[in-house]
Length: 510
Image 1 (cartoon, rainbow, N blue to C red):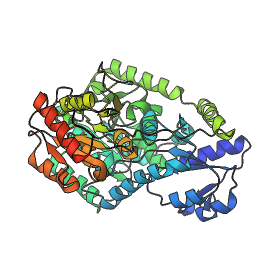
Image 2: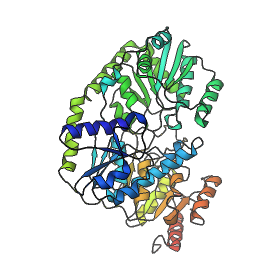
Image 3: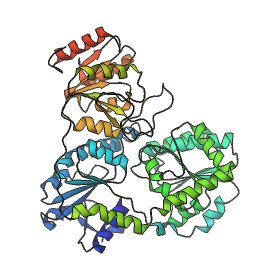
Image 4: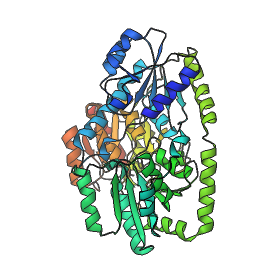
């Protein structure tokens, strides 16, 4: 994120604009590049443009609201809080607060940039207008550092090296990297090594968990390098047979492209914006099953022709992201903003939101049948559902009003597997003004919404929903949890409509 801020500043100055960076905290390495955010209101005028970079809790929304200038959001995406639950309570709370800030910023922002379609979808869900994709700029020359000779010699010993680069935090799912590698080593390549380069707090909850899991799995030659220098990182890539990512959330994903630039084939779990970042190159998988992902690593190692094809496709992907190309695309994206374009606000949905994540991906599920019953009878109602894998537009031939949202992770092929959450779907419900009917208490999105929309929400469940999930819903909604006996009968429809009428959700039960 800091690199993107500096890159945009350099472009703006090259184009003849005055550009300064404001922050409320910084380290010594960039102290000469930053001004205190408390000086922002004094320094800017009404026609100046402030780019607000957002990805984590900042507590700056009140200050920005009081600052009289034009404001444009640059959205780097906010990691869902659920990915830190059980390990980092404070970080999870800060992620929740950051998504609150995303909604609070909307009335003060006249335009927004996103680094992926995945992020742009959430901005639109939050009511932002004039949302534009901004290409992610990478300084490729920074990856040309000569390898550290000692580390390169140590790793270049005839073993197959599987590499992951990134902070060891729960959202990166380094534990799944360990599981995949263990399966690869036991089933396909005993002479293999896992190299994990990136900050690791060994005494923290997740760091301790990773080391305990490593011992439990019993994999050999697992190296946690921690923070590494540019030369050491070059040595890691120079000796890597494959790059492996099992991250559950990426607003973009620079290490994936770094591996491509360095000629290392990439295998990555296709969560969030990862497929977009890869751009059809590398191998993006819908599965997080360790054995299935390990098989992909084995195929890459054993099939030289496939490996060559993957690397060639990755080179083509990198060629499309040259500095000159990206700079021109950024200039075009900024043109409307810098020339004073001020769009109107986007209208938010005010009818009844029927939240049914399973509607398109599991159309025969009881909650999906209930959703159909409801929208047939409720004027102005819409269904909010997960978008099936690979579907860019509305899916299927259903005539009901349905809004489709990209899941944060791929939906499993196994019907019994829990459905993933969707930041965009959850944001759309929180941003709307209407009443909310929640179907699918076992889904991540419905659980996330329960405390957020409790005042205007009702939950509907069939007897197949476990009692403990109904109990959780009642903790937030009280007696607004309606249990119906069936999902597809006329008596159920009448009973449900009568119950909704008695609760005041609708004005009549016919």
